[in-house]
Image 1 (cartoon, rainbow, N blue to C red):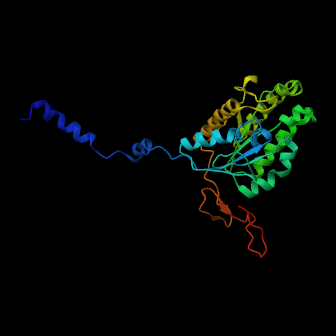
Image 2: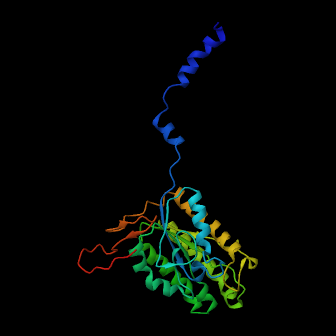
Image 3: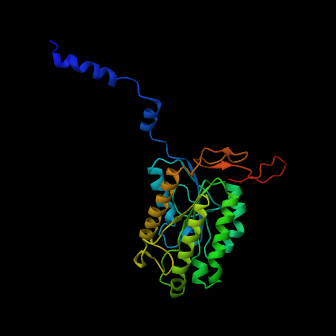
Length: 269
């Protein structure tokens, strides 16, 4: 038997069953995480010195980003560690100017849409032209932005060390780095500072390199940078590689980065 109270409720139930508006429907659908072609760029910290496995922060970063739903392809000319995709562009002992010397060719070859940059330790620890190190860093950031205008650049501060030489130089360098990145971001460049100050001397495997606890802290910082950049709409899907032929191995392609069809053109994996 239908009661009066039930009858009175019917119009309200009917109205609630009306189709939602397009705006309401869109608001309830979460955007899929952006596919990432990520270039880990830097020195021996990126390569993995100090990491028992050699995976550096890269292995932890892969796990975090994969768990968040990103389709991943790490890229670079080197491979280190047993992780599933150990590609990276980490070079032991390199300074800022040495990374700058290869940046254009590396970015043209791999076309990343995210770059994690950790560089400056060897300039500061080696006392290499320290007063102009921030200027070299600023020029490198500008170079990367020019060469990869469709990429997001995440710039890590130089991590703590127990080297007296580096520690004498590090605070002023990091302060200048923060100022320059803020200025470039304010000018509309997709550059974001990644603060590595969570690392302490207890997170080091030697005077300069993190242990896995330190690398995991670096990952927390880089992953937060990826999330913030993605939320801001900075990260577009990776651009197609010219003439790429995908293999059966996830994330691997046969490609000519120059887009040439001439006989004898070198191919790359």
